[in-house]
Image (cartoon, rainbow, N blue to C red):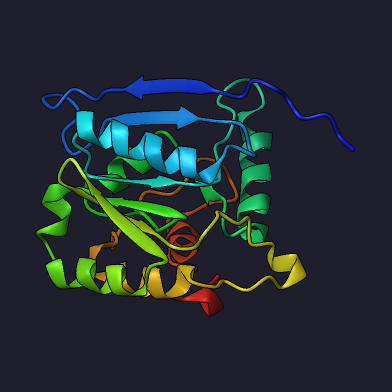
Length: 205
């Protein structure tokens, strides 16, 4: 087998200035090793949400391009992996904050709905709770868990979309209607939006 790194944990905070960068959502990001225990991730998410009020958020597998010398190549690789592994969320630290200020970019294994966002459509949150594997409240947030464990969902192997679909359908009223394109030549605004709606409009990806 391939050796996996033992220490893949990082913490990142990126804040945007409200006066000069209005509409941009600041970011908290916590990275763990790929096989991090799902129950620990649930507990950690609850602890964070007790301390920080969020607009929205996700927990699960994530793809993020390298912003260094190989940014273009990394973005192309993210595009390829994002369209193969639908359970791994593609993110761009420039585009995602602009989209997240207006609603959920997408759903994942855990989908965090902040206090302000859930008041936009309480019925959508209630419907998501009904179809979810489980859910919990933390610090005024609602956290929807799609399935028992996060999945990569390899479309090349025709792995089913499972319970990600009814959760995404329930939360569609809270999802963004416009999102800036992800970084790189492979992405544009149209295919970025179609990718973000892959669980509600899978035939359009």
